[in-house]
Image (cartoon, rainbow, N blue to C red; front, side):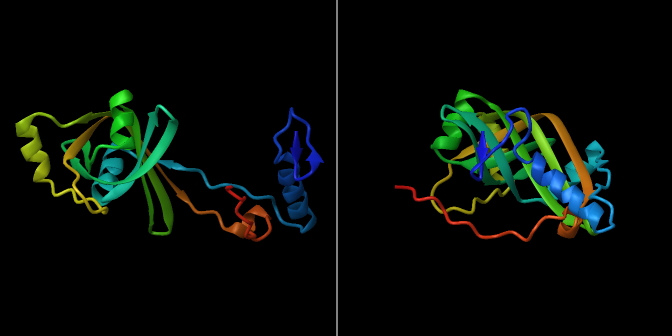
Length: 184
């Protein structure tokens, strides 16, 4: 395998030498290599509190062309997530395979957090349920009709809280802008 014009052993990660070099640089500078603060696993009620406070997140689906991620506006409703959509890639993927993941993240009190919900999505088709979900007030960002309501029924909900690591702790150079490959 080649990386940046260099031959790299296929039994090692192409980033192994970069990580080793970063650790060596840190030791040479007489400071410890980067360490991480342990994550705090959130309790279920903490996950739902964070989900209720967020109006949008990311929906991951597995469609015919492979995995895809969509930003969606949501509301929590009786232990489920509800969003609006229209016919298109997202809805086609959900009909093909209703297994989805939904993720929200943010920060508060100096800590980062992430909540992931995995479950099954179903288009709301019952007329009484449809009236209930309309009253939730889910408003999409994008203009145009969004007549379909979808409910995600969770199978698992997990979350974690962690301290953000400062860039200087990783002993890596500042990011550089790279040219976008020609798409022709």
